[in-house]
Structures are given as structure tokens and as C-alpha cells.
Image (tube, rainbow, N blue to C red; front, top):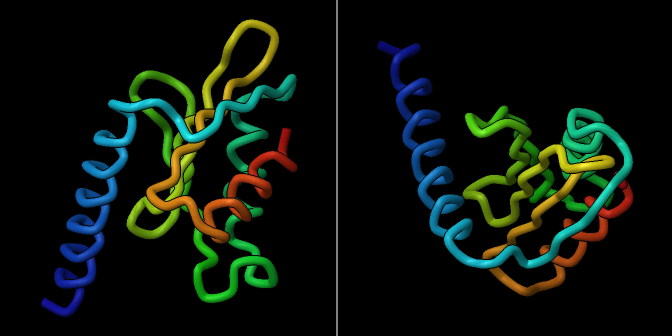
Length: 116
């Protein structure tokens, strides 16, 4: 029973983040970035940069998962910020989405840009 509860909570949170991300994808990204690096390298770099406690403090989080359509999604808790990273001709496209236009969202966008 103790093992089931954390798994259930994790699945519920993933479902909430997923629906938030799908709703955001129906609109335009907050920013679009391009890179000559491969999608997997860019996605891993963004994940690690968003986990940096010196930059994001208690809000440091970055989760990486493969997308069914190809590429990767890196997202924070509750999907406050997330990126879709996918291949395009000549490199990689990064679509950045943020729920809020605040300092934290700007820091995450800047951290993502350092991975290009």
C-alpha cells in the first residue's frame, strides 16, 4: 500500500502537467529557438540547466520525456515552463512555453538559450 500511493500521486501529477502542456501547444510558443546541435543533446542540456539549484533555488526541476511525434519535452513541476525539442532541417527547433511572464520564466528561457 505504501508503494502504491507515491506511484498514484506521480501519475496524477503527470496527467495534470500533460493536459497543461497540450492546452499551451494549441497556442503559439512563448519563444522559438534554433540550434545546430542534435535534439537529444539540446534536451539533456536544458533538463540539466533547469535543475540548477544555484539559479532556480527551490524551483529547480527538469523532467525529460520522449514525445510520440518525435523529439523530446523538458518540463518543470506543474509544467509552468516547458520546451518541445525536435529535429528540423539543419539542426533542432526548440519551442518554449511559459504559463507566466515573470522572472522565473525569463531565467528558464535564458537557461534554455545557453544550450543552443
